[in-house]
Amino acid sequence: MSGDGADRAARPEPRALARSLYLLALLSGAAALSYEVTWAKLLSLTFGRTTLAASAVVGGFLGGMGIGAWLYHWVQERVGRPLRIYAAIEGLEARHRARPPGEHGAPG
Image (cartoon, rainbow, N blue to C red; front, side, top):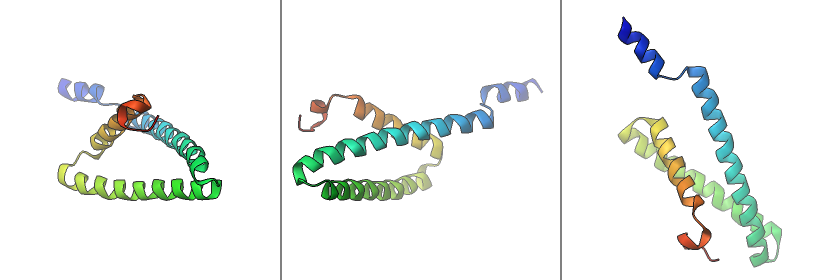
């Protein structure tokens, strides 16, 4: 009986877990939106028009989401534990984006 209480204490409450996941999804989306705006501004300098820049950014973003969704489901079917896989992907992305631009090959 005491083991059951210890198990419940170790696991977060489902409502608190859901709130945490919604907050993390919100922060991830806000970061993605800021990168989209940044890339659109940089590409508008290259293309000379914001319409072409926005089209390139949206196309790249949606293509990346499609490839990422396909790859995520392919890996998830073989590994399981989808929440841990998502957390690892988000952690790697945050680690990559935290580095200064010159350190990961971007022109600077």
